[in-house]
Length: 592
Image (cartoon, rainbow, N blue to C red; front, top):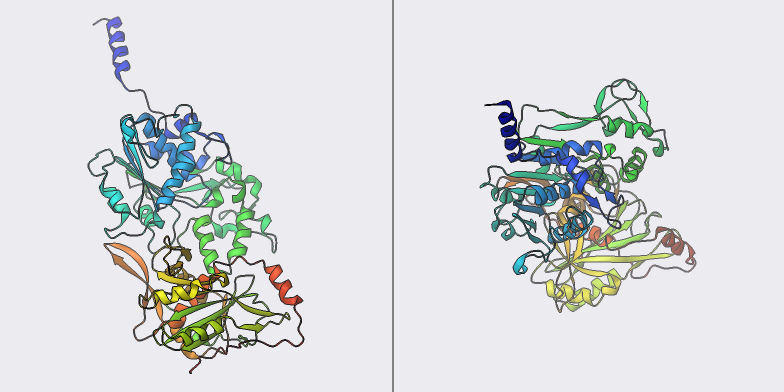
């Protein structure tokens, strides 16, 4: 064979080979654009240094799984959309994007996918709803040449039964609850089993350390961490919160202290450090599963400066609920509950000399929670300070059957009570949630609340699981609006507050039984269909009325948006002379 023939044959073979695929990071920057009005940085996508290896892992066919433990402010949605676009354009396949709720799915399509495809010249038209024949495309279901895209909600198991897919993209995994058919992520993974070249991507901000799906997935990966070089000694380290410090009272001057040379590194060096950073695998023996862990200290967004994060920490540190959000969303860490149960004796020992007739000056609004039993209604009153402190002011019992008009009239009088305030005015209940969860009493509670809706007297039904603390139900019956109360989230916040610091304070008017019932449940982790779940379980032999009342009073607080300065001004401007409390309610348990 002559040299000329060899050259011609080699050229022909080369022409038959598929062109070398660009690393996904380069493809995204060359092809993906963000439109004005949707992105704070419109135009061609430019990835940050720490995003590049994540993107390349998303596009690497040798890596079957990618897990990202993420905070907010690091651009994961942009990466996810870029990976999706690459599959549509270069490697068509059946794709399933799984998000917690249908609202999340719709928002992802409307706010991220559609604008990116529309703004990117090489992608424009590929996912248009009218591109498929026969009208088979919808907002959440698109067909394109050689493949399809389904964007579905994890809450509906039927969404996960109907599709076989090669590419599975899961966002906010920790916000997904097990369904009647099991863990939605596992159900979705089963839809990929028929593809030898499948791709599984899971990303989430972790919520609870004990039950986090994304943290469990990361634990089975090669465990990559992003490290940056110290400008002083050159040693690579992960940016951790424990190494951030600032002068007393000056969080805006927060800086990083190198854990090796202990030099203080100012914020102005961060961009250079991140540009020179690198991912390091902590479990290099694991193949085929790339895991990445980030926190917002690495982000180059203006609202993720070390000073900004330090200021947000100082705002949140005394409120466990706010501190959990800060820990989850900025540090990218799962929250660990302080303890499984609280000690009622220790709580009672914290009682202080204030009450309904000795209102704390810091208490500028009052809410109430009512638990309806068949022979009585119990009511807990909580005052709220501008710093989020909850003052448990008192507890009352109104005796009478649930269908007794006189009992409901007496409860109405209790809820209309006003008390003297140290600033000189009078203060009453701003909002109240009444338990309507008992099927027997529900209609009566709803009717009572509907007639008093303008006073923010709300009928509430407690629901377990990851939910908003309070949200209106979708339907509205003739009896009036029903509000759904996310009791697990509120109980978690209450127990954290009781275990961490003094952000819930108690009146010395409260009797020992109040504290016994407040501490009547404990947090446990149980396994359901092989998946860990956090649950609150009743301690045997204890009643829980005051805990339920406290939960409802916390829920009632969520419907208020007080102007604290205006509240204080109103209370201070009212005349002090000749003032007398109306319909005074004693905070001791009423026995008759």
